[in-house]
Length: 293
Image 1: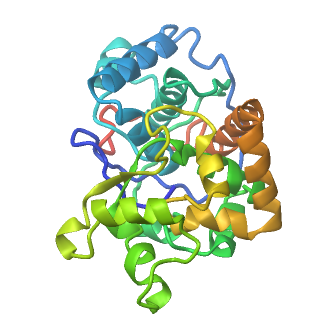
Image 2 (image 1 turned 135 degrees about the vertical axis):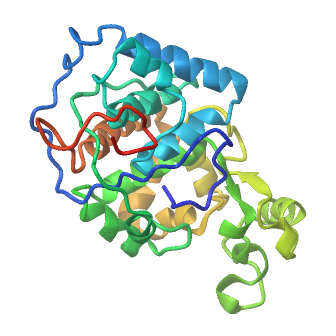
């Protein structure tokens, strides 16, 4: 859920559409496109399947873009199938769900009918998206400002069961944690040794990649939480979940009960997808998801 500190695949074009309104769900429904674009889910699923087949990291990229309310340059074929009908933000919400489902994660029912925003702001995104080294209380404050809560922080952090992070997002934990000149004492020693090899203490290693979930980076599962219990969270913001009694309890439960994690993850994704939605005559339906009409 961090801002643009992660490697996003070359053909993914980040288009920030962060919306600042409160949590709403009016005028969204599960059958919104049943008559205007009845094959929508099949088209999105096939597109996502093709992308993941070509590069397994695409699932994490799509999910992360959905966290950022951003979009990919890969849905022009959908525009041909259902011209001026389906919004880019609905396509992205569906694509994120399909990506998770296709790599072993949960499926959730998603109300549709969102419209695309008329403006974008990279500065707002950088300011409002949680950072990779922020303390838990700061991250929680950003979530609550969007109508989410502490449980959502713990649940949605589980998205880090897939994907990679660039070394500069966690390198301070390896060599100079808190300006101490020493590694983060909480970090598992075997993981520390491995990461120091991947990310040596030199500038040219900043863009090297390490898996967010060293156990199963291409499968959506609950091993992320088991790693946290072993002090093997990659990012400082990940391991911070163990420093709070409420989130630590959730981590423990999710590590034991994968179906509980899957159920809660789907519910939190629906909540997140309802943040600040535009419906009715507000906003627009973009013809090109990289550009305002």
